[in-house]
Structures are given as C-alpha cells and as structure tokens.
Length: 531
Image (cartoon, rainbow, N blue to C red; front, side):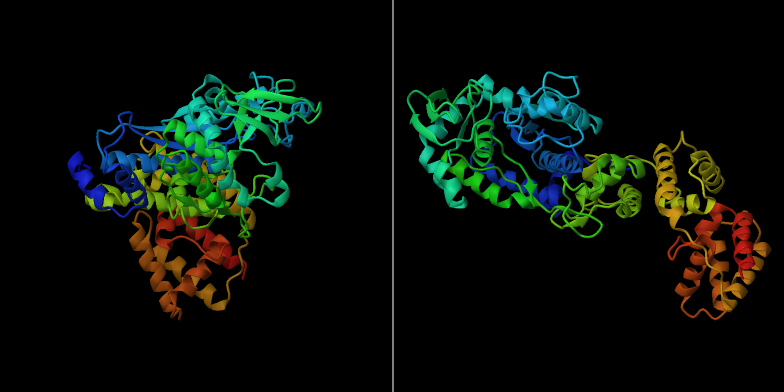
C-alpha cells in the first residue's frame, strides 16, 4: 500500500526540492513574501493564437504551467490559484491558412479580427470562435483545469479599458521601449495602438495623427479615403501591437506566472519593460527550449516537419507525452516517432519506483507532477519495448493475439485488470506495424553463431517450458560463453539480428518467457535453415 504523506510533510519536502516545477514555484513565493499573496489568489496564464489549431506545443505549455501551479499549491497550501487559457482572437487575419474549406470566405476577410472572419467550416459564428472551441475541446480532453478568456471579449467588454487608457497616457514611454528594436522604415510609422476601421472592420497598422488622453481617443488618416478618423482606444475600437498587448494583458489581468518559448526571449524582455512603465511587475516564468525534427532542425508549423499530438497518441499514451514535456524543458529535444518507446518505458520505470520512494524522492519523480501527486496504483508486468519486440516477431497488430502471449506470461492479467497495459498493447501493435516490422531483416548466422544457436536450442529443449525469465536467461548466457563469445554483447546482437531482424532487442530471457519456449525454438529453427 502506498504511504500517504501529510500536507505538512509534502510542503516541507517541496520547499527543499530541486525538481524544476518547485524551483519555478519558489519564484512566486519570493514575489509575494514581503506583502502577502493577493486576495484573489495567484494567476497563471498560457496564450494561444487561434489562427490555427491547437498543437503539441500548446499541450506542452499548458501541461508544464499546470505542473508549476500544482507545485506552488503544495508549497503554499490554502492560497487560491487559477490558470487562464487566453486566446488572441482579436488579431487580424494575415493570410489564409492552407488546407481549409471555403478559402474565399477567409480571403475576403483578410485584416479583420479573427472573431469577425466567417467560419469556413460553417459550425460557429466566426473562424476565431471555431478555433477557440477546438482549443477548449483539446484542453478538456486532457482534463486540464483552466478558465478560458477571449481577447475580443476582454477588449469589447471594457475589461481592458483602464489599462488601455494608462497606455495612452504613457504613450511615448511605451513606444520608446519598442522603437529601438525596429528598422528605420517601421520606426517611422509605429504606434502601439491599432485602430479597428469603423467602415471595413479591419485592424489597421497606421501611424497616429493625434492622441487625446482626456477623451481616451486616437486619430489616424484613413489609408483609402485620406480622411482623419478618431476612435476611442477602449471597448474594442482599438487593439494593441502584440508586445504591448502582452504587457497590457499581464497588467490588466494581474498575471503572476507565464512561460514562453526560447524564440520569445526578446519579446518577454520588451513586454516586461512595458509592464514596468505601467507600474506593474511582469510575471515570473521561464523560457523553454523548442523541439527539433528528426534531422535536428527547428520544428515549424508551416513546414509540417514535426510530430503532431494526434500522431503521438496513436503510438503512446498521453502520460508518456506529459513525461516527455516534463523532462529537461530548457534543453532542445528531438520530437520524432523514435522517442516514443523510450518515453513510455521511462514512464513505466518511474511508475514502478514511486510507491516505495521517500517523500523527497517522490517529489523529484516526474509522475508526481504528471498526475498531480496521485500516480495510478498499478503494475506493468511487461515493458513496452518487450511488447514491441513481441508484436514485431509475431508480425501482428492484433491486440487480442498479443494479449494471448501476455496472459500466458502474467497469469491473471487482462485488459480489465490492467487497463494501462491494455493501452500499451494497442500502442505497441500500432508502432510495430508502422515503424518496426517494415524495417526487419533477419540475416543468416555465421558458422559460430549457428553452432551457438543449435546449442541454445538444445538447452531450451532440455530445460522445458514453464520456467521464469531468469532460468531462460541463464541458458542464453551459457550458450554464448560455450561458443567463445568473450563479449556477450556480440552474442546478444547475433541473436537479435538472426531471430528478430534488428541490431537491438530485449533481454532474451524475458522475451522467451513472454513469446514462449516452443515459439522461440521455432525462430531458432528458421534462423538455422538460412545457413
């Protein structure tokens, strides 16, 4: 039975833990140690640009932020926390995304806020509303606890009005933060405010012809008519350039924590400076590294060279993806199909360790953060890599056939009693079908290898069925040593290449126990027939 730690014991261990979510949470403790936490609690935020669909990076940012949020709650029990998923849906549509139906609807609305662009799918009031719904369904499918906020709603409802007026009052100071980062041509026309044209509904990027702080308005020369137009900066009549917009949101909502990708380091710095101009401290946070493709190149949504979240979930459970997001967030990592099996086996390893770990080690176990302190109490009698080898050798993607082997190896195990294992069986069948089986090439053994294989076959026949993995492993060792394999790794590699068809493979004793004695002897007979 897993020992249940008291909250005080968890808090003490959390305050000392070096796991990165606790290190991040300590920034929030330090943020308020002098004056106490705000009455309405500590606010975490993640942002989303709804011109496209949620993706694996969206998942990564929300799951990592949630880990920091839960770590903070363990360190500061009783302090309320909230997580906002903020949609920048008032951004103007800059281009028509590829692959969407009815592109002419979008093309006619270029420049308009996403919530004023018709929905090309015909299911929602706008393209922004459609993609917001997809975001919420995406987050809900993973069980995230969050509050959704729309930029359009915040701008038009007046929620941002006070901060927008403050930016107008500090216009020159705010602009002077951004201007040094711009080229000469852009610098000449830059303004923090982007008016929404009353006639066309488009978000205009135009220089300002005038500002009236008392009235709360800005004026501009209309690019088509040449007339001077005056609009309020409040109630959705203007939006802000995005770096200023980001700072405004932090200040208006009182955001305490937000992380961002390494590619936004400069933007975080500039937005932080704007927040200080407005008299507020920017939120705590950190910059996570970006993912790389199979060739080590930065993943780009436009290039489509990354692994999608839907693809990962075909071959691995969401818990394995959450683990991959937890590990080394400040290190650039390859995000490709070949990282999935290792992530799954790492997850299983951490799951097996957790129940017996002291509290200090539990808080450093990634599963404590993935499962919010409550990892599933289950066992996995078969590793994912072994399931992959089994599916590959059996050349099947039928979960029922794989379960027949598993049930023989682990009597009493079933899809009903071991639901996590059942999911892994299905993932292994799909992964083996798509990535392993097509690459398998079994070579013929050389003379020494053939002699050792024949000896192993005889040893297994003499031992007989019904033994455990260690007994079979001992016979594998003895056969290799008897035939001059001083480095047994060469013997194991020969077994993998002749019996399975790859240069790497499982612990052979475990494989024999799972696949079956007679079935393994059948593999040996086929290998010897190739001599």
